[in-house]
Length: 323
Image: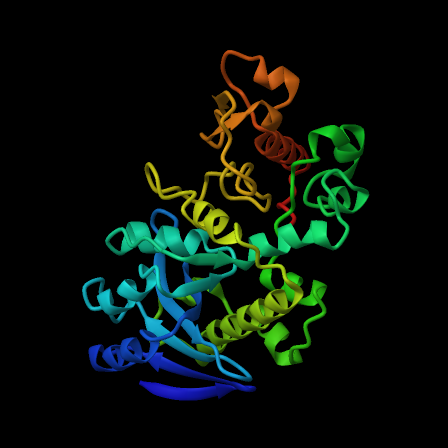
């Protein structure tokens, strides 16, 4: 177990059973932890989990533990999984869907409990910041990911379509002051290297940096009152989205995209629902166009409709997707 420092963040790399035991004992009494996982094609069939990063809040910067999920197997990682599954320890994540999916399919069906997803908190905060559903600001976020002319032509079909932000983008948007190093490290690491050993120093810095950014964001959202009483339930629904049925693969473009899946926020519906044939989820009528709702088969929810148009435009233009 080695301890290093990134700016003001101290991180410990853990790759032995002995060091893992000490880390688990240190984390077990925490009421809140920051969680982020790293890997190659994380959560996808054929992918692999490389690191489980856990951050412990401190008065200034978090103390990060980077746990080697390649050197340590599923049974050896059980003390950490017990913490992840504990309802008494809050796990703060940023888009924890693939983290949960990797833990579930690759490590004995680990189910995260007591999760708060800051990506959802950011989307919910938009309303508090004056950006209502169907507003110009909400629709403008969709471009250039979606074709602007299509959104302008049929704005009513995009009122429920939300563009998901990245972690760095969210930190910047909320005006959180972090060091230049913390925001520049992202472009200097190749994600295909996650399963190589020994891990390069840039990989460890990258992982520790994410924990630092999540910690900054968490404190800002707590201070601003963006963490409401429904967020934990919504977050659990969100991170477990792809843990039913076969594990998704890299080619499933109607599940792997940068739009918020429908019906994650809000209360579960009691209305009549129908199946979207592309994302394979069921939705009430408000999640379909009139034409699609009235079909007997091959229905597309509003998000899958948007992704379908995006795919057609990409294929016609021979362009790679915009992020």
